[in-house]
Amino acid sequence: MEKELIKAFNNAKYQLDTNLTENIWHTIIKREKHIKRFKLSIFSIIGISSLAGMIPAFNMLLKDFSQSGFYEYVSLLFNGNALSTYWKELTLSLAESLPTINIILSLSLVFVFFLSVRFVAKQIINNKYVGKAYIA
Image (cartoon, rainbow, N blue to C red; front, side, top):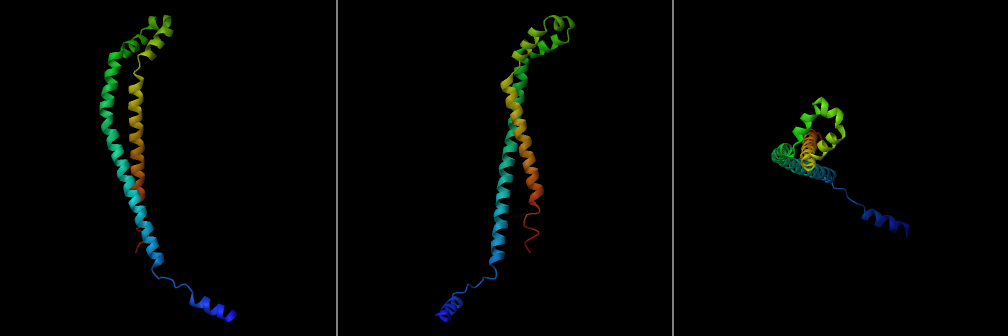
């Protein structure tokens, strides 16, 4: 009985494919390259679109600053008499005249742009080493 089991196990022994490990490694490298190229293209598109969106956002911000009278309140800050007597009212008026929505929009676009530039730079730096050192 034991001889028959040994004979059955020897017949069922797994034969290794000689190129299996290389094929698996090449597939992993190709997949990583594809994912990195995809991320690079997506973050490039996001960066370019946020850069293009900054132009109208900053134009709107400058227009809202001039329409809200913010510059007039800031000029009153440098007048010594108004600042010492009406500083509470002046600071409240200054805070009310800020175009907060446009400031938040502009700063968020700048933040997204810098994040995408950072990620694209990382991808470009790291992408040149992927696969070249291991693939013959």
